[in-house]
Length: 453
Image (tube, rainbow, N blue to C red; front, side):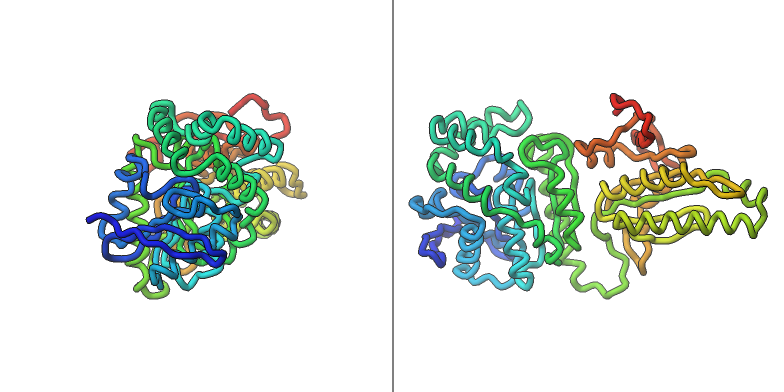
């Protein structure tokens, strides 16, 4: 059945076109700002097939785009939210899931902060938080000038952000973009969004279950924005995808769309669960520490003096966890298990611990620790964490030597561009797991070789 196309009017009298098709739970999908739902890219139509199946799908064109009012002049973040709210009112939506990508992500964040009672789930794909995340101020004038003087070249530059094998697809998309929006409107979009977009302070106010999808090496929208979202939003889950460019690459579009389906379906099933049930929690970085030679130290010092050393170890560890926003999950006497909302904060804490204990001087003994980290969605139950993410973090810590910090390749990827130094420690098959993983040592000492990675 062909979608029904309707029109609505915003508070500032701009006409907005939207489509309404299907039946079931409502998914409102915000296109990337410059793309019309009427000219959807083939790869997106295929990739979103599983997501849209069995749902009522609402899509719309922003002002200045596609079937909406092409004479609009104002393209601020507030104007984008007005467009979205006009569609919601016209379609009589009360509760729904909201999916946004690229330039629509700040709009979705602003709406979620303003209307939490309306949203069941929020999916944010390849987004950003500030205008400066995407365009450095010194580059804005040059980009705007290119758009207004050579719109054909500029449209290709703005869209050709995927792998080279998708360059033909990007070329076709650039041709379509030029039909969906004018060069003048695109230039004004960039200027208005750059000056009006900063939604960082809204993140802690969003309590809606949120799935964040982003490629680690994205060349246009920085992965650090996705990390910041995951760290600051109370119920956010981050899916870190390998590679660069759009989330929906041809090579893995099906798997990516399935992750969205699983999130929406699992979240809906969890709504009826009792408090205290075992459920998968938000994205966390899990840190394990362990005192090297603990048993020998206790035998050498005896219980009383050994306990004095352990008390100092606990004080230093807890102080550093507090400084870096870590949550102590439990202590095992000779070590700690902690969790962090930010992978960067977790590694900063690990480095702080190693530096603190490398300088620790006690009248009876020194302390050396090993540290291991892993990131994922551990299972939460009664204040404790369980599951593969936790087990792997423990196995990685056990592999470390005195004064070492070890992380898996996935964590190293999450820290890309953060100026940490890594040394390849080779493949490792954790006990109880079938597949190997590559481990990296974090070079935290002042004499670390700058060229290692």
